[in-house]
Image 1 (cartoon, one colour):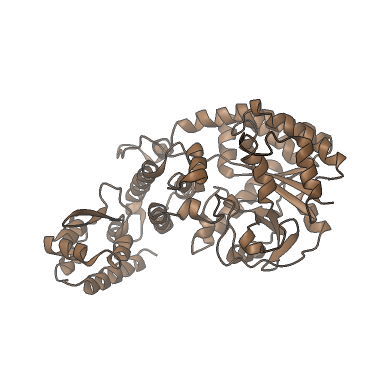
Image 2 (cartoon, helix red, strand yellow):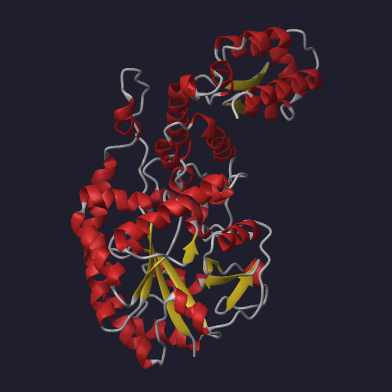
Amino acid sequence: MPAISFGFEVHQPYRLNRHFAPDPNVKKKDLLNLYFDEINRELLLRVAEKCYIPATTMVLEMMDAGFSCAFSFSGTLIEQIEKWSPDSLALFEQVAAHRNAEILAQTYYHSIASCFHDKTEFTEQVRMHATLMHDLFHTDPTVFENTEFTFNNEIATHIKDMGFAGIFTEGVDRILGWRSPNYLYTCRDIPVLLRNTQLSDDIAFRFTNRSWDMYPLTADTYAKWVAQSPGDVVNVFLDYESFGEHLWPETGIFDFMRYLPEELSAQGVSTILPSKILEDYSPVGTVDVTETISWADIEKDTSAWMGNDRQRATFRALESARVYAKDKQIWRYLQTSDHFYYMASKYGSCGEVHSYFCYLVGEDAFKTYMRILADYEERNIRRTKNRKAAKTLRTLPPESAFHFASPAGYIGYTAYNLDQFCQLLHIVPKDSIQHHLERGDFASWITDVLGDTDLAERIKDCTERQDLTNLVCEWSERLWSHLK
């Protein structure tokens, strides 16, 4: 008979300003209002009314009766409820102090920093979050839950080296093979708790699906499923906003949760906290995760954030923006995974989920993000080690980017900075390269937009792709050496 461990992800991003336009008259102290949308307060208050307050009131009553569960709060969520919903914060403080609750660690900004090549920023955000949990909730988390369960061997090693006792991730079939997620495993010598995808998504996604053959899902049916599951512990992890926000009260989700502890008890199933799992159970094997996994979409990988060209271009630009990040707070807000999630271009059921969660979608989300990142870098050029290098290497808004074309028109490749320009020179069709060289477009763009007349003059002497590519890439590397 397995136990069951419930975990709740509680997060809200600072959504970007849908109507952003550069304004040089806006001072540094007002940049948050320029870059981030006024809708954030409205949405936070709505979620607080529909979820945080009623759901947490319910969970506290359940915990008083013996139910146990874990919470993972992002720093961006805490900042917003401190400003706009003190009632929510007071309830979460009661949760954190409860004997039947456990607070988990994550990145402060619910960020994609763990995907950066250099893990320094990731480490700093994990420590920032730990400090916040200690100062606000008087607790020191020992179990880690990365943004959207993003995980691989390198992340496992890093979290172990930071002193955490265990880490959550998704129970992905391709890393488990024939094995069940309902056991404790290790990866790089750190215990790994695997989310049971089926039983978690039965609540999060199938609960309101009238075409599902098990609709409507009742507490007693669910408790029987858990009791009949093989293994030691069933880890069920959900977005907390599922209760009341994604799944409205009219669906019966609150009644389902209220009755669930009693039905679990009737089946002989107890609830257990993550740290207790680590104490009571021994790992039964190891997992080797060479490719990054997550709990997102059907693919269970990073394609929700880096699955298309615009997401990858944005990610590379964001990582490079470190040298411009004199105000790290804004740079870190821009690392929040939600911004990249909005840029996805998926179809079918995954596309429907993305559309539900996105206040901006696809191309609009991408253009808004790049305009804001470009403005942020532009404002910080004067504070870098080498202004000339910083100007040439900066990220550009879509209107100033280089759009590769052939005589017939645009061919689908765009460079938003010199590094991306270098990368694209390797792969764009030869006729496009020749088209732009003959017209002098490369030199004009580098002179008029990037402001590097020296590089532009040298490009004028290039007649072949290889010479051009070598020149631009070597030039870029030299400029970066002046900034780092």
